[in-house]
Length: 252
Figure 1 (cartoon, rainbow, N blue to C red):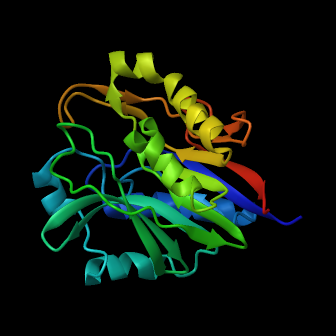
Figure 2 (figure 1 turned 30 degrees about the horizontal axis):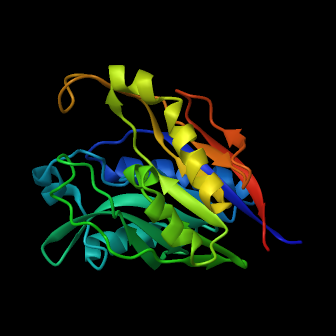
Figure 3 (figure 1 turned 120 degrees about the vertical axis):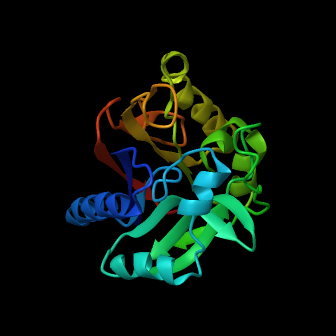
């Protein structure tokens, strides 16, 4: 039976500096190449930064058909792994919280977050579709962060015979909430696995956002993890640690 090697990155948070975010992506991609990773996942809105302000997204979101984004794609042409990364997207006067799938500098497709946090994300337009992608015979779909709390989002992927669900996440939150949630994320994801019987891999940021950067102090523990179809965590980057996990997924 053949396998697909999937990697997931736990990264520092980058705000308002897509060049720095891209450099981190490329460093992880180089490490992943040395580990023969086929598919590499990054956090929610990693390229643009995840600041919940329409004014911020006016400045930093990308039109994926623009010359500016074409320059990003150009730098990804040599990357062997298929990349899935989050970015604020602007399209036809609307903003989306999106995850873009890129292969050798070409856009394969886009998933747009369907469940938005009320009220903080409501300047985004919710997505309507759950596209399915395929790599070396492995079908996979995408949810984004808060989507994980809704069974319908995972089921929409599973119903299309996907064997893997990817979850770009961004849990940089107030410290008291972070303490409360740091172990609950995997509990919620395990519920989605038990409902659908697929592999589930997440990618998150980690570190501390000081209070002088966009409001009160925030902290992100992670987790970046991989669960098998039995809802067992088979790989996880340690909390508060930058790193990469890999897992081999058998192709049915």
